[in-house]
Image (spheres, rainbow, N blue to C red):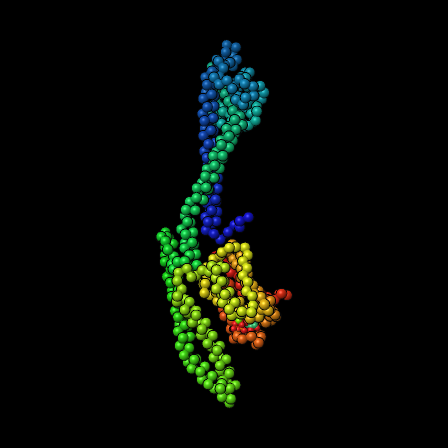
Length: 451
Ligand SMILES: Nc1ncnc2c1ncn2[C@@H]1O[C@H](COP(=O)(O)OP(=O)(O)OP(=O)(O)O)[C@@H](O)[C@H]1O
Ligand SMILES: [Mg+2]
């Protein structure tokens, strides 16, 4: 399942949008319902007011002094038994008149205590009813009470069906709003995605700056980033050049020292000191060559050099190692991919492989294998296996300190792994070693920096 990123602009905006849509549609539902109820009640009131007045007009007191209707009420529902539409006319001392629908129960005549129409909820023949009353006067001035009622359930069912339809419509509307909002978010956030792509190109070295037109809100950020990237690049170039210059300026004096030491080595009195001088001078020379190589590499670095194509990068190194250690076999093995591009300094990466392969070549009995293995689509481990004696865990821990060596029988200055560690750290690569029953392995793992 995809992880929900909580610290994301898109998630924040989506959650806000969701809340807003839910609140807005909920409020619309409540308000629309209230307005509709008001309208339905008003129209019931009006209709029943007309009916109660019609009832008053139609009611007569006949010759026998009994209440009687001139003709039935125009609405046929008053004659359907228990239809929920009822009327009643009462007069002191007379038999009350009731609608044909009222086969049981009675309406409270006291509801009509004034000539004005009243509407009150109370218990009707078939449940709660909206009741209306009117007081009129008979031929001799007697009070006649007219009452008319409609069951509350008719009104409720109207409102219920309205609520149902409205809810369906509002849910659909909310879905459409959310979809449209989601699409808007995509459009709104697109420049940020473009910026991310442009920064990726900058990091991989494919571009020298962030290119493209960006909205005014992020354009200042882009130009700040560009300035920063330029300054950074200039600073790196400058420090590499000065390291190169320093190395270069030391070269001639060192050559003089070496010459002098070689001359002294031929004299027996100074032979021992001369050898010490020569050895130290050689170490310094190696360092100087290394720094010069790096300076040369960086000054000649063209666009696109910030990428390593694996396994192509390994071929020339393996060839050189084979020449350096002719009695050992070098093998290359690739697992899980054909070609992979790492967005890091090519010269540095090649240097790292060379240091590890050189050590493996020096200490292997007969065979060295370089294995590139893709751990995921964009992370890669390079393992350098040799069938030599390896190191103990304690030795492994100290092996990357400058000048540390455990086996004097082989030539070297003890700087290789110290340099390797420094480069690996600067590239963000993980460097590790392990002794195996079958030999020794050095691992170099690249994984993209988490964003
Ligand atoms: N593959 C290996 N097998 C066994 N021992 C190793 C291996 N790699 C490194 N070592 C040990 O770690 C020490 C440090 O290695 P490092 O590469 O720093 O120095 P070096 O190879 O001796 O000299 P340099 O690389 O500077 O010429 C080595 O002297 C050696 O004792
Ligand atoms: Mg070495």
